[in-house]
Image 1: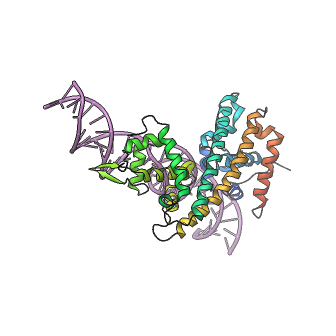
Image 2: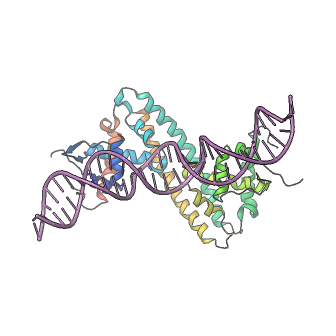
Image 3: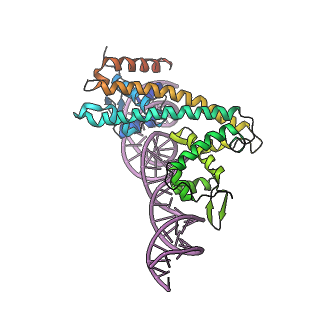
Length: 146
Length: 146
DNA sequence: GTGCCCGCTCAAGTCGGCTTGAGCGCAACC
DNA sequence: GGTTGCGCTCAAGCCGACTTGAGCGGGCAC
């Protein structure tokens, strides 16, 4: 079995990305095709793996494309440090994000079920939570009262 | 105690936002000051609550500002439906996002600790996972083989 | 009375991540 | 031999969420 090659439109179809996005990834050096048949991009298996990883890390703006590049092309340069730093930082950030998502989810659930016409003004439950947030926000800055 | 008023720079300081961002929120109608002293914006307590809620929902790009507006200004218009739809949809989206964040986190943790120089090519663990992702990606599209 | 700080408006600029459009090449099919 | 389909390049455009800059006003400390 000779090395399997995929055209840009195939890759796009498999991964649900736009062809133009793949060309853009090539352009910025994030995902280069394994080679070309003439002028035509030909992707190999390794590029599919790489793309899968890129999608995983980049989705929902978790990482920028630049960070993604740094994170996954780790040790090619012999310098693992940059990659590891980005990765460690991202992990911390993601954990916080999960926390905040959960918090948002709870508030949304409340909004969904709260019968008040204007929950921010009228709902004591939501109000209490926001009051707390605002108070600590003001409190963490010195000179809280104007 | 007369109604407490906050200047734009105070609000910015308390919430860690830029003054220009608050002016922008005013401009798009997302967060209007309670009133003006002359030309100068004066925010009240309710606006602080509203901003707290906006920040919670908008952070990390969970919701766009437009969605946030729809979600929190729920029933003023008498039409709760739009708000509830946005909220329900966002909740679903957030749950998926949490799933994906966890997945990413695991991969990142692996990348952080994996000793291979180029994990995508050399690490069997990561490789196996990506292989699975790629195979199902190809499999979910008919005509998987080129 | 002038310098400084804070605030204002309005228009234009920025950034990331693509998308779109013009203009072209090559291969296949009728 | 024309047209259809896929691919290419390069430059420009777009969107959201702000930021920046120019130019102005009001208040008050020195």
